Length: 249
Image (cartoon, rainbow, N blue to C red):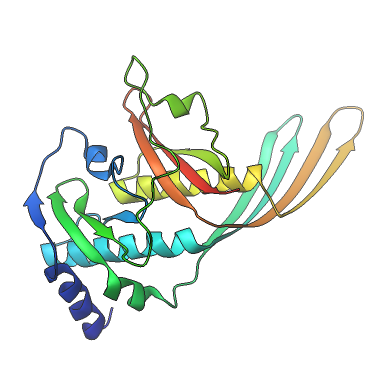
């Protein structure tokens, strides 16, 4: 990161920020809950760094990235799988890419209105920002929990006209932001599976008297517009992070 870019991030933080605090929430995901906020409000998370300034910079970058992902997110995934009836799975390879237009990153950061910054041992810095270029409309879905405290969307995917929803999960990584990113990507992949613009699949099966060999190649490409993460959940028993994503239908 250039010195000028870092100074710009600091300037964004200092202008108009209403809250800076250190908090140890019972659940760090409580800090990432955007229910009650309009959909022009975004969360950025940094992960742990040596200084609060560095954490704040990374959290602002994360929030700005969320805005750009909402404009357009391109996914390109490829899978090769080889199985043998006697040896089982003999080969597996996956190439997954998520692409977005970052040419407007600096301009996006300049216009952000920073609403709050919270520091947390597990999350690092959590920054709440608003994008003044977007109308503060209602979010397409406000998550609710069942009588056990689990989100309803885990068992019943939301249905809202004009949108489609995808669910992704991930086991914990060493850093929280890596766990969330993996879960978010899985949710984006689920959206791609549900509405693929381009899909290609080739399967080859060879058999003889004693065994069968199967080779599968799959490729998918798609563009998601209006992509965002609307809810998250951590299943402590199964040590699994869950993400609910939405995009325009």
